Length: 266
Image (cartoon, rainbow, N blue to C red):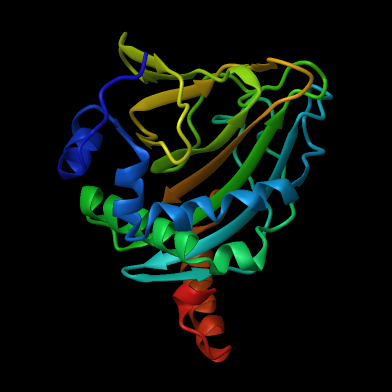
């Protein structure tokens, strides 16, 4: 059963008080300042993801792309392509490795729906915390059932080692399972529900809640579940020193300006 959706007027309060908020597709589009059709236009990009070769369980059920951005106030700039890194504290299965994935396709990054969504989330989290600069990692995921079962979170219930997380359902086709579960990091309470409508979005305060998604299985011959996970971290990317992060901010903005583009167009 789905919990009640959070109204746009109460998202910041919900993040501060309970550590999570759940938005329906129409409100996600409104937050992004874009028609829902422009979000739907992003979905075909999930047909072009590359195999994740780092899975320690030997599985071949996950495809993904990954890119990084820096947002300062209203300006979003893509950084030079970089590896994804988490400490073992936050990812016991795949932590401590620099995992280099193929980048998000340029046409996806340039799409109005993508730009509007990432920028709007940065503004929202800034309103919650009063932070003007975010180090953003965007992950496109497809979990498939070609081997009979697919695991959206093979590491189990976890935190990501960031400040805020957005988990967005892009689509699910021919599957059962994929239940979302969230738990208080230091308490007994939790919620469990299954996101079924494309562009339903779960927002998480990573310091106060733990999250996971249950495995998926096919209803017929084959199925898959597509998600977009976007993380926002203050200060630096994981694995960076503070000064290196400040340099990355300046470099990303300067590179965008030298290319003759506005930073938000990258």
